[in-house]
Figure 1 (spheres, rainbow, N blue to C red):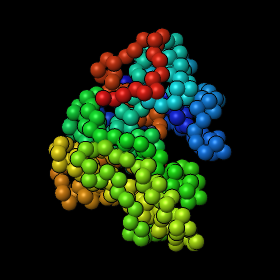
Figure 2 (figure 1 turned 135 degrees about the vertical axis):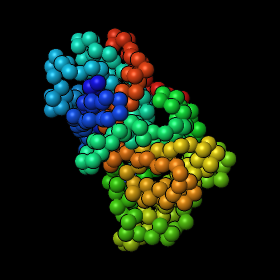
Figure 3 (figure 1 turned 180 degrees about the horizontal axis):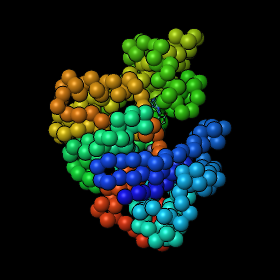
Length: 349
Ligand code: KG4
Ligand code: ZN
């Protein structure tokens, strides 16, 4: 089965063609155009600007991906239907509706967060051996999933394909949002995650003891806005005077985020006994976070495999939407192209 997928939920326009026999995934194209530069002057993503940029690049991306004009060889069209920014989501949704309608192919609406979870099934383009591994088999259920991005920080128990239970979520900022806001406070560029983690490598993570919000709460929820405030308060009394101060603030902030995410996830592993743990989304590109998850799991639950997407699939991309779309297609979860609407608050569970 060959799936064409589109992703336009925020500030990345992405088009992918994924082929699968159910066990092996072959990615024929995965092209992503980022709009980071367009939104930088506004200090955040402007929905109308995002929508206009999606319109500008989606057709050139379809051409560059080699999507045949008559849909020949494409078996289904998958698209991110939500959650996300309505004006942005609508571009991908409308293009997918038109293609599915004209080609008379099934249309599969995919939840963006679900796409992040299935990103672990995609073969690493940097690993020539990966295409020979049945990546779809790596998910062992129940799977405990932590999608962490600029908009999401959730703990989800995945009992099977399409069977999700929300275990915990952030009560305010997402972890990636905290990285972006702290980067702004210390004068680093957007997106903050890569910039902070690069600075953190040069610093001492134990230099400043920032709070670990909700670490001791009985639930599996998170909160990151207080941590951002703690960094702001610290900077008032200890302004950054040199490169070493900057590196120490970044490393100490990153350590607090990593500690909270790892501690809560490990507690959920103990309570729920999953057969595998997934760390996905933009923040899962963070090397320190991956290392801490891997070492704590190895030490306390060596029998529970820990899965992360290849770095190419941590941020928003259409390949992950195609992978999630395939499992929905197996369950015949198609919709009439004339009725699909973007859903900014689409829920997984
Ligand atoms: O998944 P994603 O591309 O888009 C959303 O769905 O939000 O995630 C983007 C987020 C941004 O907040 C960015 O700062 C963060 O992921 N991020 C990182 C790293 N790379 C990206 N956060 C921490 N460390 C990184 N290396
Ligand atoms: Zn995302």
